[in-house]
Figure 1 (tube, one colour):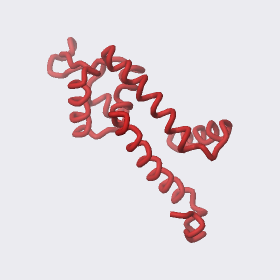
Figure 2 (figure 1 turned 90 degrees about the horizontal axis):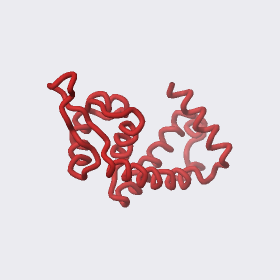
Figure 3 (figure 1 turned 90 degrees about the vertical axis):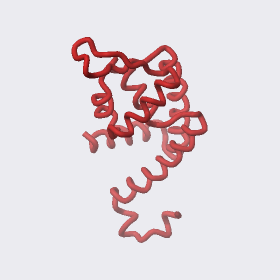
Figure 4 (figure 1 turned 180 degrees about the horizontal axis):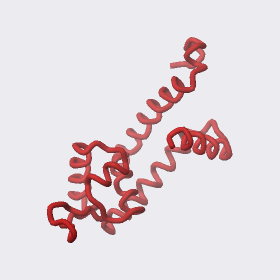
Length: 143
């Protein structure tokens, strides 16, 4: 879609622009991550484990904004690849703690590099200062 072909009343609405950019960005990230043999959810889960340490499936899903049915599938994939490990929580044997493995940490670095590259592609029209400002503004809106 060419922006100049969109009615001005739409084109001047930030919410419309955010939605369109989000759709385009999501598609680009999905394709890039798939080409790298990964998924954006994999990156999110591994990043959460790296930053916050071992945690329950529910807590990780909440931190990452991932639906629990998707979390179960993604954790099974990551466990099968050796990127996470499940162990009984010593404080509550009814739940499992998910832990980042050494292989998972290496995979996180690979996916981070891939995702950083696609971020540069997506935001190529902006200077580094503009990218930082956009991130700041979007964070304020989200918070």
